[in-house]
Length: 453
Ligand code: SAH
Ligand code: SF4
Ligand code: F3S
Image (cartoon, helix red, strand yellow):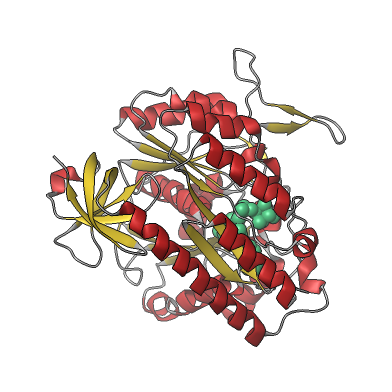
């Protein structure tokens, strides 16, 4: 009987994409996927460390694997991802979680098959984590989750060192894939029927920048010798036949160029949706966060985006309770949200990350104050979302049908270009297609609709 695997992924789209690579490598080795982690011959926990909650969730799930491993010692428990790039996590695993067999990091995923063989053949335990990225490994297999939409990495790592953030430590320095490798992947996806791609990077706006000696940068060149920055890359991807929707994540406001804004005017397949994390509306806090823009610059970029693309849906990330945040600072964030009127916002309580500059800052905001501000912010975001939802009523919009609704298995579910979820009646043959849908009931977080004739 074939050996089985099960992967649990925490964290962002980067991790989801990495898990598809891990699954692809296992399937190339003859493993088949199983839905039960307790029963699988190989279990992988791909971890995230962006907030304390993510760490806690991981240790909780890992705890559930203790007995299954004791019952079946031939089972292999693997842990990887962002948490593993931190020595204190490795130390805790060694002391308290002896049922872990294999530990690897974010930089040596391509070595996973070799490491797994070693562990399974010799029944030994292995910890192999690299401190930083080496050459980008191309051509790895991938077992993609959906045939009709796909994540495509365009770069890895982050150089920004926002003072609250662990990512630069867990993902290393910025490295961009070559444009020809990205295009080859997108073309291959299109040929296999994929309709929507999301280009991934921690800061896609600095795609293609290559360090060229101390302090100076140049851009990657394609084989024809043209320099390729992110806006240029989008234009190249826009030309790929068969790709009907292009999205990207994530964009840093400091590097949002006029060229990129122009791309929204010109690119036929670029979704009119933009995720532009602001983090705070207070200049003093933005400075302490090391974000390199102020609220005026942010407003100016948003205005320009809306001029170029009036129906663009804007979303953001906001951190509440960064060290030193006063009530006035927080009111500035509330004011910014009122002015920008986001279509959606991911709101987070500031979480202390060991080893980051903000962890050592004085004036940590008390938990009760953080929660109280957080609730006010969420209420405001929802109020605006509710008001904006009305705009969807009775509209006919293209919707990519993604599958059956999780809450009602008799209904299909899909997404508009803006990212809004729409549930509608219909048959399974529509899954993977982009169809015109009339919105019959627009609600704050999702809509109901029917296929328009
Ligand atoms: N590269 C992306 C964000 C990656 S992390 C960007 O810069 O936009 C995703 C989000 O998690 C961030 O935008 C931020 O809002 C949040 N985040 C990161 N570190 C955090 C921390 N220590 N506490 C709370 N939220 C945090
Ligand atoms: Fe973290 Fe800032 Fe880099 Fe985003 S840009 S990953 S928030 S350090
Ligand atoms: Fe988490 Fe790592 Fe992504 S810390 S948010 S999984 S880059």
